[in-house]
Length: 248
Ligand SMILES: Nc1ncnc2c1ncn2[C@@H]1O[C@H](COP(=O)(O)OP(=O)(O)OP(=O)(O)O)[C@@H](O)[C@H]1O
Ligand SMILES: [Mg+2]
Image (cartoon, rainbow, N blue to C red):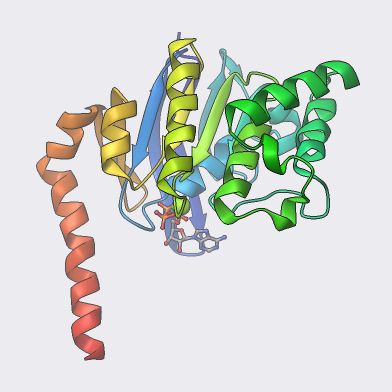
């Protein structure tokens, strides 16, 4: 049985089918890449999985149990943790306390939360800024901190929405190393990224979405070489070129 079963999930915004009948299984310990052109429905799917949006149809099971319709708090307690495409940290709380707050909310006692926070700050190379407020951190440091909050208690599944976007290459490597290490330890991930070299390197399997549907699902390199996937990305480039041309 898959750890996460996504069946015929659909989500519309008015007439727009943002997620349109998605079926995906994620096995325990898998590091699944979720790719697709802009607007293909990746973030919307993660929003449904994390309970931040309610699907219009379909089914989601975690460990065989239906979780569709549960809110973010209930899903977090069940171990579905996520990172947002637009970074969310507490700006007026120190980096250290950002982690502590998450640890306490996830049921750690103060002592264990502090130990865990110090370990994560070290691993994510944020120890030197641990006493700065979230709002004083650079964009990349905020991403690393938000990333850390997902791992105060090892999640059942971590949903990462473009963790590498606009992050300095050194920090990107810190994050990739962290993901690689946790993956080797059996952590399950869905990783949304437009950074194809990193997806190829980290993810043995990828799912490509386009216009709300799954276009391809399989070994990452095979998905990237799939004619329909190439066409979807080229279509996006062609539209961008057309828009550019129209402006000129
Ligand atoms: N809250 C919303 N209200 C209305 N439309 C939305 C909303 N959220 C997303 N959409 C639309 O749904 C479609 C899918 O968007 P989504 O953000 O899921 O795509 P994505 O694959 O994450 O794109 P990107 O790679 O640019 O992050 C897009 O057309 C988007 O404009
Ligand atoms: Mg997105």
